[in-house]
Length: 231
Image (cartoon, rainbow, N blue to C red; front, side):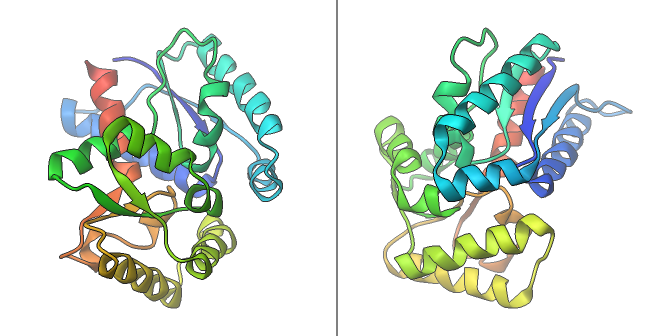
């Protein structure tokens, strides 16, 4: 079994979910008392929140590069990052590493292609929705058009992520608002919805909209990571 290095802490909620799901997935594959070999580097979430709010991506890249090198030095055989948003600087914080990095968008894109979809809605933090770094990866590498909600809805989605989900607060009114935004994206021609922030699957799930495919980036990332760790 390869040892998985995890850049975590953005947020602690999603990091805990990754830890739980990675161990569960390995146990489902291997049975018995088997769990995953993991190294977790968990940052102070206040750092990530500040980088995102101030668009201080240079500082983010430098900090995460140091954490990534530390994980490699500690014996990680592959690397993942639990935040869609921080993948904005993935090329920079993985530069020079000898271990492979599994980008969070790629397993999701492969699932979209396998389902035959080409136009999907994209929920996430404001940088994920309002800029093109994630949309460009989906389009240029996989031919998938990712559509963000209207600007006002982006503000709502982002506020709920930071003020509620990252603090472990899951409110029914926020869930209803998210689902209404998903419905609007479907009306706009989106065939599925990418839950492109790793806290969002803690609030909404496929069962909430059975007829509208929900692409859980955490579940897909975990499955691909475990597949590689056990290859």
